[in-house]
Image (cartoon, rainbow, N blue to C red; front, side, top):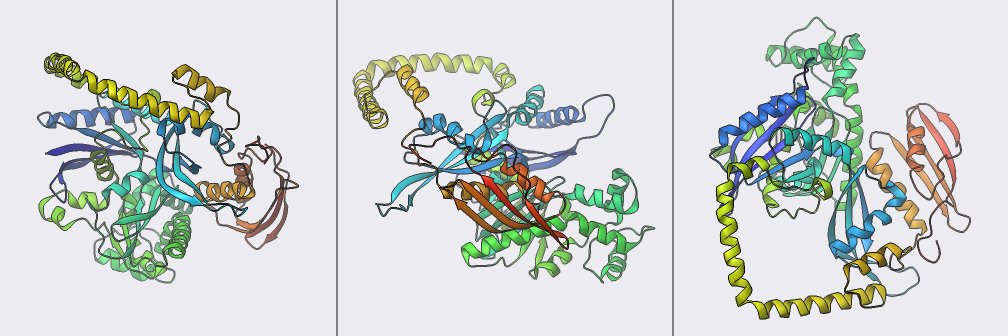
Length: 559
């Protein structure tokens, strides 16, 4: 039996799609079609709406083919992540208390769309010498509700209904093994899009580390426009026609070579200035890649043996040679697609250069039962089925409903005793769970809800410690300030006097203000942090911040 899934990836100027069939007994899928629909700027109507309408007409060509699942790839730079630990793994209980537990970093309101994934049980070492505590690691995902709701409205108007909505970084692991099989033991992947780049590092066919940064091909356009004092549209045309990148002192030689090879067209422009502009546009990408490789190598004690490049930004002439010389490892254009796919699928080359749409199709297939933990189609945005599909098949649905009613009557009469047994088991489990949680047996849903609402602090949650401050600062700097070159040289947390002293160096004029704005989002810190002591050292600013951490709500009997 096979499932046909459609993956859709929304870009600023294009919609990419991939239609794949996954057979349960096949090692690799059948890529039926891939394509790109441009989002053209227009003065009379919404260009994105017209692109969605074109996609809808395109799908009508596959009317004879039943599409089992539709996956949507989201901008990962808008996603926020946090890890939490709980002594239980019941999804419904976690769903109720997770927003309160995360209020110290995210300030939940109706603009947050939340999903979470329950990981494995881990042991936390006790500071007072008692037995280690076993808890479950929970990964929480926060995505802007309005962004996702607006995007789903476009789909609704075009009679397309995605089952799965997931950030591109979380969809990428589903492509490993099914679509991508790197031959190296350790490798890196750069998927350079228009507005963001996904950095992934892995071992064999498993991704061990992913991150997304707001650097893409548009940064190259902006750098070229600033260098030659031209518009963004003119800069984009120059990049596509004759843009290239080379290491210092090699610009002229590489430019002549690429022209002779007809990889770029000659242009009345200084090639050295053009290469330096492209270099400047990708500088933050290099910094983020170097930081990611250091973190990966220190954890897994192995360095990447090569780098694979995909996405529209990877089409910049010379980027593979330039990155190879900077990193010291081979760089390849395109991803290592399975050999079976290359031999049998004419669209494999397209997938090798732009993986996001095919990756989310693989994710939709892997979660055909609708139980994907990080699926953001929850709550008010939950998948409800396609109205157009229901209308087209109303008589089939009517006959299925009649058959279902008959089957239910038969099953009810035959399994009355079984139902009674199951009811008693559920009742007993609920009595035991509520007694452990609240100290008394509760079987009424309203009473359980009231107990959660009346509970303050949840005594079974860990109290706030100095490590809580360190974990918040570390996680949020990594997740939200990846584009800033920063070195935190000292972090002194005095929990008795409730003073946190942070020392470090930061590059750029906006680095320190952005860092302070990020700290002000932490519940334990004041809304307005006092100005730090600073010293200018060349292009970096050395700073010392003293923050009063006395704004925390109580997390138990003591802080």
